[in-house]
Amino acid sequence: MNQNHILPVIEGLYKDSATPVFCCDSQWKVVWRNTAFMHFFPNIAIGQDMRTAFPATSSAWENADKCQDISLAPTQAAGEFKRLFLFPLCTKDICYYLCYLHQEQEKTDNLPAPSCAVMPERCLTSISGQYRSPLFRIFNLLDPIARTLEAQEQYETVRYVKQIAQYSYKMMKATINLTEYGKLSFHTENFQFRRVNLNLLFQDICHSVQILLRNTELEFHYHITAEPLISMIDEEKFLLAFMNLISNSCAYSSPGNEVTVTLEKQRANFVLTVSDHGVGIPSEHLPHIFEPFFSHDPNGSLYSGLGLGLPIVKLVAQAHKGNVYLSSEENKGTVVTLKIPLQNDPQANGVLKSNSANYIANKFSPLYVFLADVCDISGIL
Image (cartoon, rainbow, N blue to C red; front, top):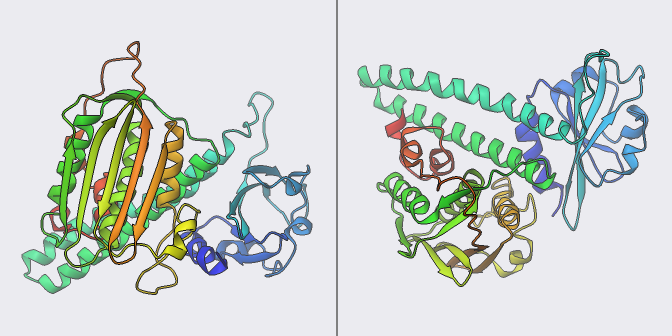
């Protein structure tokens, strides 16, 4: 892993943000800053030590192995910015620190200070909102534009509008994965475990995926056991992990690719497997596939994606007291298996029914967001 894998991701997400964002290396030297940061701090250059530019009121700079909410000492350099949120982005080989400056009004006596436990989540939500809100507005504009162009029989231009929609979905996917990975890895995410009928859940999800992929060259199959499987899971988080697996299998495809999902019971566990006959993963990359921000493009592109899909899958599996296993052979395909203990609490509320209608009806559901770059999205414009 080198900076070429991680800095393009940061730049793509934060370059045009209105919030000052910068990135440091393990020596606290600035290696990247966005336009807003350069506007507020024109005298802070690449290579400058951030500990001198933004002295903290505590020893937070020296304890940055986890997410930090840092109170800044009042200095001329810091100006109106009183807090700095720091997020370590580390692998076995390299470590960067993503820093987000926050303007904060003076506290009054009757308002409690925000706890350090909730500040990282607030920061992640704030950053995510800066991207999701404009993307929603883009989608709302694309629909009437596409309809107007179709009425004028400008079908070639409509094709470009659909491409804009696909790129917007890709940005939304990146934003979702980055935000959710941050919450999961910084342990700020509260899981909502409920009793779920896994048979119905994955039957409905897979059927919806099959509908979206029906006009593609991909063959999608699924086999759901008839044996009833009821377990305590966080449906939303599990769907996020599952759609990352489906997206990977579809994106790294090859002619004649088949994607197959199976759900079965093995002793006291439920086992979810996603297999494909795609391009596979080179053996030298297999030790790194669960490292955050590690991304490999079989076509040779240096930057192919965020590299957060499989790390998210692993974190979700671990939160359910399970694990994930992956085997792959180049030019033959990949098999990913989640093995999760069945946890059925009879004292919990009734079994959650699947919300399958929203999977297809809601154009912002995870299915559209994660499959827009491989399926026909004409039905949503």
